[in-house]
Amino acid sequence: MSSLPDFRFEDAPDLPGSEHLSKYGVAGLRRLVHRLWDIEVTGREHIPAVGPAILCPNHLSFCDSVFVPLTLPRRIWAIGKGEYLDDWKTKHLFPAFGMIPVDRSGGDAAQEALDTAARVLDGGHLFMIYPEGTRSRSGNLHKARTGAARLALRCNAPIIPVGHSGTLEVQPPDQFMMKPGLPVKVNFGAPMYIDDHGDPTDPRTIRTFADAVMFEIAQLSGQKYVNTYATSDDKPDSSAPTSPTSSPSQPTSSPSVPSKPTRPPLRLPPNRTVDAAFA
Image 1 (tube, helix red, strand yellow):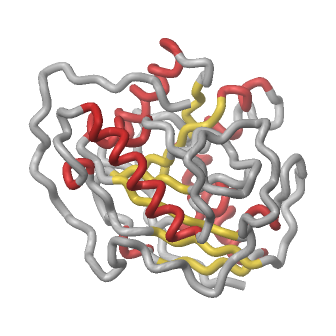
Image 2: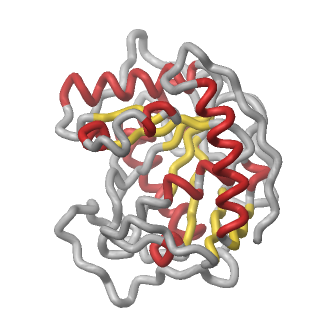
């Protein structure tokens, strides 16, 4: 049984989610999860105690959305596929916990989800998005969509890369139940800022930053990086590691570097917005 880390609940009645259910439901789930699984967490010191940040984990299993949020020291909101609203089991529960549904066909509906995510960050909270856009069926780490990088630019928020392992064994594809007693590792990397990767007003910096985030995630997760987008047609790669390793690979940004508490505002053109090219 892993130890239960400290947690601070942030009130945000103006944002998606049920305040009552989130506060007491998350508390109960945190205790349950840390009793049932052997969870090892590194890099929690990189999560800012206050202020906005975008968490970008790798995505292998549905239960990634359980283990990553419940190892954090703060409340978090996250993007979730709109199809969850079509299932009676998740239609009300997931939005109550702060899921922001997104229509992955794009257009105005997807833009609305990004605008809501920006409200979360502008309010000084944590937000989670899977940069691959969908679960990796190959077991490899795939090329990032650019939604997270665009949000970082729009909201002047750092990205925290997250690499986890073991979740695929806990809940393989299309399996409803999660297998208890297995080890899971969650590794949080040092904050990354878009203006460290080029001119924020240059559109090419978005792609450069998105790629740099994925390289950090690969170091933290131990996955093989492939320069292709993840799709539902991908097949498992027998050479792709999925189970927890003894320790994460050394990230290119040293974990000993403390989080930057403040950053000067980015100088952006007026009326700069984020498009919905992330799903």
